[in-house]
Image (cartoon, rainbow over all chains, first blue to last red; front, side, top):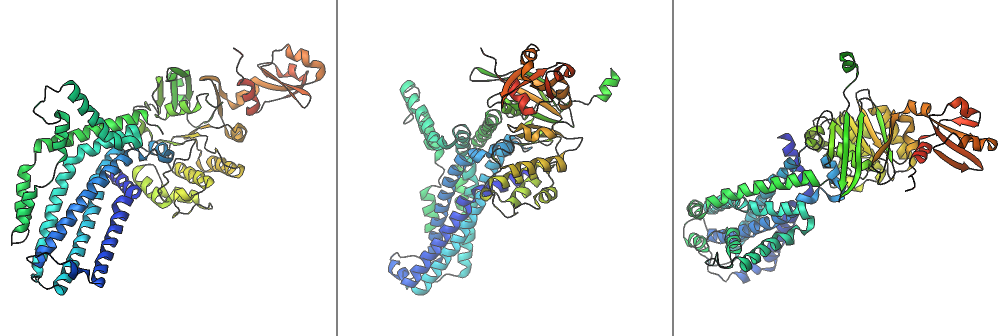
Length: 296
Length: 293
């Protein structure tokens, strides 16, 4: 366990750029934009939308930020796995790691676990901080722009907690849902290094094309063939737009419990559990390839 | 039989019929050797002779045909476990460049059960390597010093060095080997080293192996070399007589004829010229000539 934690920490040291420095820079830019807005009086000029209350304004802003950070995390993780699984070959460092009493599976597992623990945690912290920025922005609007209803401070707090609880739940499920995609690009990274990113899309596309050319009569009912339609369905793990809209438009505080419960009923659990199994197999195959054929 | 078993320690490395192919071409042609504990072995050969491939097989970095056992285990199947007691430095700088020295030591403390950070720190005292330095900012010599400090701080039974001083200047090379000998070697430890600069390691070797085109052509203890091989600066009048004794190598140096003999009586050779023991580099040149095909 001690060695696994140390290996996860070294992943952080090697790849903190995308998960620490870049989010920190984004937060600084957001803060600068907000401060500029205040000093230039832009908040008043932009306040054209009739918003019910300050707390609701905060909810809209914080949810939008949440969606952006989630998208950022999933994209950054995709690039992380594409890079990290072959990063040990950089500057001949593979020879050093191979001189350590750690198996290739454990090293790749540590990369996978880093992508599922410390990096999402860092982005979640960035998400919380951006919530603070949104909150400050909304408070300034409440003070400076007429037409807003001043909310009870506890309403902000309740909204923030509900949104964070929902974000956390969604984040955990989304990471598990997309685990096989991350493991897939990781395996390709071990096999083909920097070509893993185009190949992650090219290979399924070619398989789909071959299926359409060779077996088009078998899965006629599926638009674009079985492979492509399956991947199209599998890649979609968004919360229903109507569900979000309904929750947002209620006068009461954002209800994470109700929305998340509804979301849970829509999750295909067999696909989620099966996907985690597939991810495990892909990481194992990658580690065996690395053990047998990657010496430098 | 039992007495023999009790007095002969089990070899640290044992290879039987070690073969390796790359792309259908055989690189190693069935090597057989044992490396007992407490010895300092030099593995010497031309570029492409199969040195690094042999080391890679010993370190579990490549597949092979035949049998290899390191500390009694199959290195290809048990590399991770074996590395608790085996340390190596490859022929290229391989320390992870994104880490600081302090971070490297902290990481090793947690992932290597036999790494002692206090020892590593001690080995760096007196060098220009600072704990807060990023490895990517260190010079080639400092990286070599750091890597040596790291492997010397690992309590390993076998240390494998593949051209560890490649690209370093003479000062660093001498300091490197001196530290290795003074601060690391004990009777329980075995050192296997490859280098092209054979003269620089000759003083420390207990055994030598020459590898040529994937075959071991020499494997003996250093003290046996002087008994078996002799070099003679032959007097001009005796050149034909010396040639009749079938030297394994002959060359002209500043107008004098030098010949290397294998297993010829030294007293007899002394009648032909000045007899000495060939240096490793002389022996290397003598034995490594490829026979015309």
